[in-house]
Image (cartoon, rainbow, N blue to C red):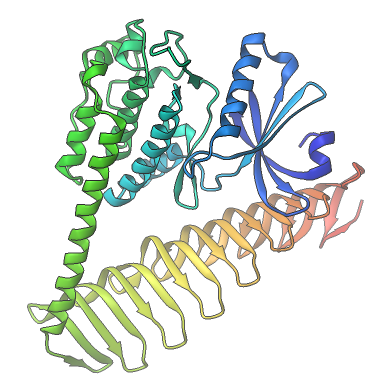
Length: 473
């Protein structure tokens, strides 16, 4: 990581998050509060007058925004021909990453979850449209996730219309999200943002792009004609699929308004919630109407099919553990909650009587909390462990241990990112101390072992081999 006078006085730079419009963005930690920020650094000498104008316009917009679903800008400074934009850090990545994860795992978003995301995105767009601002670069990469909520970002191409201005003609943005009017060289307005919302909704439902990719001229032709790839995913309500076609109208005047999109989505979400509540009531009524069935290891109250536990039920174990949830073929299968006598609680998916599946939660009686994947009763896959001492690990697990790649944020302000094995730092990694010191190199069994470089906060360095945290040569 490079040296920077302004940043080094107030922040610890942790890693490069990537490039945005006109600059690089770095994950940084306040030396005073230990709070994490995303800081965009822009080398002004490399910008044209037009690019500098757009950069200043983006900063001014961010500073004036006050909306829960738009990335907050705390501060902006220009020092020594550099611009610094200090923003809140969305620690859960972007919507593009979530879509890619679902593609890899061959899973789809739950309709309720994607509706919550999409409503928040639309609320953010409605907010800027009411300020006469067009975003002009809406795409999953610019839609960030923070605390499981949407945060719209990257306003580098946004444009605020003057009071009398209704249309603009400058072409900016990402080609695959261009509206038909932009492709055809016509003047465009806020309805161009609405078109991009339709593309995004199509993507989060189908995990695919609605037009053929590859030959950009063919793509533009299909967009201009409104020839949308058929939606074959039937896991979602008809109202939600119909909404896509109401948004992706070639004629912008026929495109549905943002406020009506929000109302339709909220109505669909309310129907889903009512359905879930009715199903829960039905499950409870079914349980209440069943007789108790005694087993050698406990008592079952719930649904039975062909003399086997199947459906929804409660099992009270003789050791005072209790499971409530779904059953199939006499085994715990589906979603369920197991309350242990010792105070542990597992909420998540089951397969053939074992904890197995995605997005489960285990509450330990010592205060630790694990959120993530399980396989055959073990933490296995991607997960997050919040320890009772305030440390937080996010990364890979194998056979119940942290193993693979991961990040550990420590309560004392220290930070490790790198490889793990058997729950310890093992392999290559970076360790940042809360006093500004940093070690980058090899680890073994939690200690610095092997080749590495230690950089002190004052800039001094030692480089060579380490053994059990001690420098050897």
